Image (cartoon, rainbow, N blue to C red; front, side, top):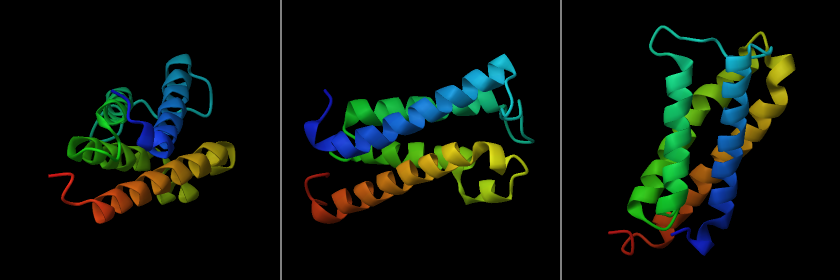
Length: 127
């Protein structure tokens, strides 16, 4: 069930989903600028897949309405921050990727604020 009260959170999650699908598509197509294929810790494609999965699951479970939804919302935001976090300002490709970085950061900030407000305003309902 998709919760009606989660419209803003769902919009932010869908924003991250679209941005990450575009990144993954650019990686597979080899269209610059695209993310590197791997990092010292993990491959980028599986990482983006995990980030997409967390965002989709958050939407389905109620991004700010259920405990599991909030946890997945925050996980999706955390995973997206690897691709769109403030460290990207120092990236050599920033002049080419700044629109995605700024939009991604806006979506991440929105999710964190909405999750915080949800927990703060109705802590007992989430138990």
